Image (cartoon, rainbow over all chains, first blue to last red):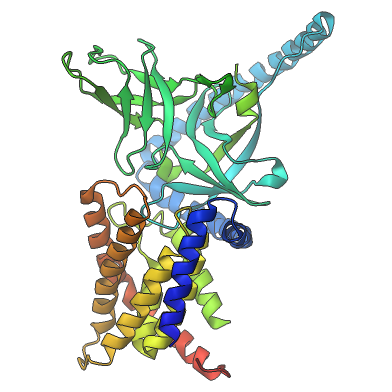
Length: 277
Length: 164
């Protein structure tokens, strides 16, 4: 009876994987399948994304010309800035040599988003850089520039050529964050398709309704070990505050800074664990 | 070989194209669609095999305990294959209806098992929304994919040497 066999096989796989966690033979098989499918995903998404962009940008046509002008102006400014930076870097290098100081620099890997999670209950993306590029599990993933970074999530699985990133909106994601003006700490929890929920450690914080309050990563330490995320990455802005001075616990909802549906390029921060602060 | 191509294509579309083509934020469940169509055309045993292989392939891309989708789709393929033998309706809409019902039942079953294994279920409203919209989306996509899947089924028959 083929069905009985297959059901038994499924149950065996479930219990085996449930026990083994991320070390089991099934996880290895899963990584093999993922790395086999990654080049195909990359090929398909390089065709599909421009089409998607075209339709998204149709609605934006009136704004595109102004945006283009703005970007060109920024490029000119940045070019000048870059030249200045080269000069500054040279000065820093010589000063470093002088003092013998070793500045730890955040290194990062740029990656392209080549796919999304397969299920409606998983908020993950697949990127086209893996262990070959030095990406390992738990590395923080951001977008924007390394200087003004917006938090995307963290790496949860790597293959040689790809990596799966759990977005901060995933239900199993929890990030230590703090409010930018009051510096109150809290845990930012993923809520799937809704805004993030930030459980605050202190109740009754007052918010100025006219001033958007942003939430950044806290960069805590546990037993002398820094957390996954370096401090200061932008998570989002408070979209709704439930401020009841008498409440035992209080929370706010946070709108993520990143638009995950149109995300195409990300940076994986290497050594985020060691080099933070 | 044809089956592998169908499953890989479904997974690729599911992870690259359909995240951009969502129905009110929900993407379809293409592997459920493939399983139901194969089961309806070929019967319970073949449906179970297709469901198992397709489900396992999808499980490998997930971080939840692997095997849940394989279990779901094995039983879905078997059930649809069995039920199909008792349905005599000549309606051309039958595949779409089967896909809608199969997807709704399958997603509900999958999330129940995941919940029993300790996965965070999330709010019930979101689950209900996903069940409803994946069923509707599956029904919409069935007429588009049905001809190709039927040809794939015919191809697996032609090339088959060993029968289960």
